[in-house]
Length: 193
Image 1 (cartoon, rainbow, N blue to C red):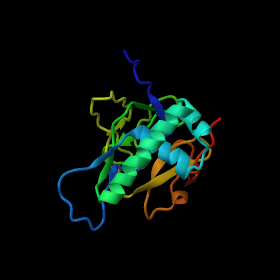
Image 2: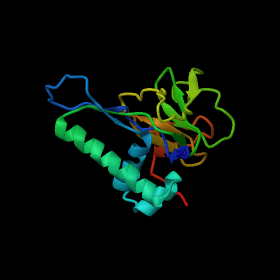
Image 3: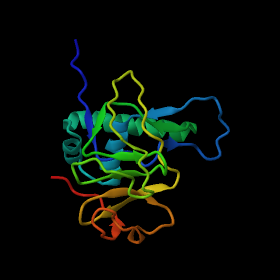
Image 4: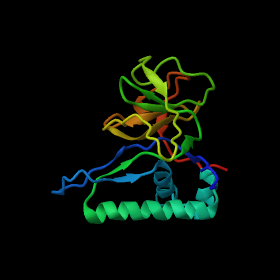
């Protein structure tokens, strides 16, 4: 009997839900499914440029496990590119390293450094938001809210740590943190110890 799969830690929700190939004439409904942990492995190893040992530590898994996850992600992305298939990011067994929320009104993702649940969305002030917590079993399908089309990273408060999804065309510095009145700045990926 095999042991149950451990959940893998990811830093934040993906900015996008997948990709559609440009100029492809294929419409056979076939797509490639990239698991959230595979997305995180690509983000850490290729985007952040971390060695596999450090990336594995951040995800809370062993280096050989990280290597298997990373290799599977690369194979899936290569298949999607070569065969002109769309791919979506979903599934897996993951958890976030901190609490994230998703506003149903403006489709913004945000995270606060405070322990209490926020009273409203820091962008549109709507009370229609929910905590993004999900843990997928291997054969279950869960729902991660679809990201906004204009979602291109995060704006961050340097004082209290509030992070909200960046709105294209609006500089982060034009936003004022609703909790501590500090101008927001563009997020830089933190180095976790």
